[in-house]
Every structure is written in C-alpha cells, then in structure tokens.
Length: 272
Image (cartoon, rainbow, N blue to C red; front, side, top):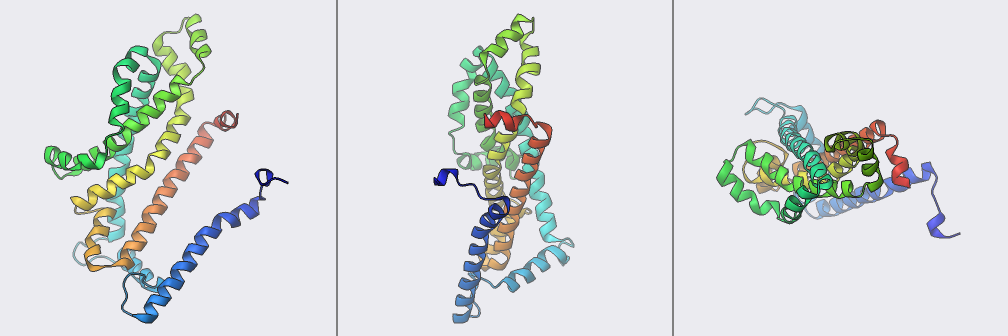
C-alpha cells in the first residue's frame, strides 16, 4: 500500500488535525513552567492562569478610563476597517477582473498595469498614505485596499481567461452582447472563484490592518498590541494574537461555507 493511497478515517483525521495544536500548547506550558521556575517574575512566557486573568480584565471588565470593554471595542474598530476595505476590494476586483479578462482591449491597457501594481509592497506606501490622507480611517482602509485589490484583480482576470472559449463563441452565436455574456456566462462562473481569491487575501489584509493600527491609531487590535508591548505585557499580547487568528479563521470558514451553500456545483468542477 502506497502512502499516497492511504486515507485516514474522519475520526482519525480530526485527531491528526488537532495534534499539532496540542503539541504547541504542551510545548508552551512546559516552556512557561520552566522559565517561571527560574524567575517567577518572567514576562516572556506567562502562565495560562495569568493570561486568563488578563483576558478577563480586557474582555469582561469595564475600563475605568474609557468606560468600555477594551477587547470588544478594539475588535469592533478593527473589523469595521477590515470589512469596509475588503468590501471595496471585492466589488472593484469583480468588475475589473471581468472587464480585463473578457475584453482584449482592456487587457491590453490594464493587464500590465495591474501586474506591476500587484508587486508594489503596500507597507512602503503607508507613509505616503498618511501624508496624503491623514491619520484617520481613510488611510487605513486605503492601505488594505491597495494591498489586496491588485492581486484579486489579477487572479480573477486570469480565471476569466481560463473559461472555455467555446462558451463565449456559443453565446455570441445565440446573439448575446458583451454585456449579456459578462452577466450570464462569466459572472456565475467567476463568483465562487471570487470567494477563493478573497480567502487568499484575508491574511495580507489582517497584516496591513495591524501595521496601520500600530503606527497611527487610538483603537483596534493592532493598536492595543503595540501599546502594551512597551510594558512587555505578553499576557495581553498572546491572547490578542490568538483572538486575531481565531477571527481570521472564522472569516475563512464563513467564506468556505458560503461558497459551498451558494455554489454547490463548484466542488465537482474543482475536483475535475
């Protein structure tokens, strides 16, 4: 029996998926206990009980200065920026991706431009955005859009170009206009791929968000992490990082679920 043909059962697959997380947790606990045994005041690897107390204070106790739950207010601020930027990127990528992939003239004019702009490191533009747009919300949202949009446009336009040419020819034979081909032939097949593209951009989007909040913000998850770092407050930083990771995972899971429910045919197409 070759390894390539060995498929674990569903229950075994769950255990195998959980194993790396369990090993990381065990490694952290052992490392934390070893460091705290040498120095009870060590802040690098705080005990789980210490982090639980910090989470309780940040998430479930009103802050005396602001009168709000800090973790909740930070989460709302960050998600507002992130979702706004991703909504703009998704809508723009859908339009430009179809136009560039479907129309040869648009591809000739914009294809190379999109390819080049997708190579620009967005974080290098952050000072420019702050100078031009100020330190408010617009510059943070713009950074995420600039960081995610070119890649999504490039990916979607390539997916449009991969569609069977016979479909477009048949639609034209039946009298469809370019607008009708875009809406009735291309759009239904591109929407599930748009979800894939959006999923791939979640990680970079979070990176740009945290970077922007860390440099110039008075709220948000990134702001809080970089605010407490000066105190070496790892009992707050580590739970915040875990919370960000969980939020990103839940967003990815929601997109996968949406794709499976809205486009049940796409899984069989992908398998082929």
